[in-house]
Length: 196
Figure 1 (cartoon, rainbow, N blue to C red):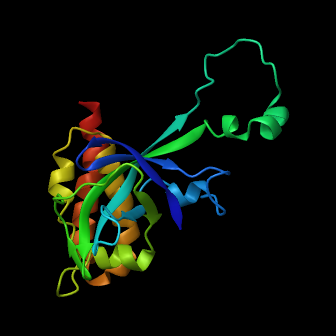
Figure 2: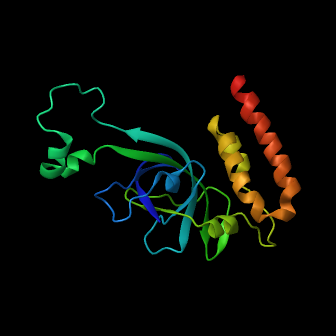
Figure 3: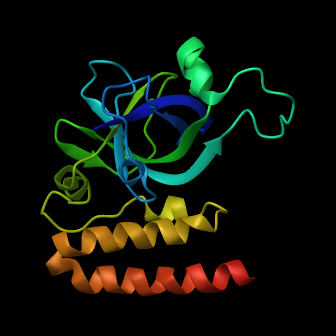
């Protein structure tokens, strides 16, 4: 499922993706496709075997008309006929945090050397691919991106990682104890750290 395209970067691992609207694609993404904690993938270079792997970290709503209380010359129904692109200026942006990349079926949990480009297409990752991204060579649970994300000064990260752990837990029954310890630690941080 295609979600949208990259329109801006906040850093080498943080990108804003504009979610496709009605006039941009035949299959418009529903809110559950770009929900908090969903895994996405994108190709930094077209045709490259490298696929960046990210997670939806935040949502921003874009409404250029907010605060514009001047008179309206046309109704929304008339604009849909005479200027359909005008309605499309409202939109949804999602912040995607890059967790690593895959290449030739192998997952890497580190900061990638290459970056996404403006216009790079963002695609929803299947549950199976997201689970494979969290498997090491022996099939054990892997979350190598946890330390760099926890070092970010962002109170949303602990909640994001809790969502990720909850999604991954059923796929890794043998890693139940490790996931449980991580989850308890993150749950404590999510409650206590924001309180100061």
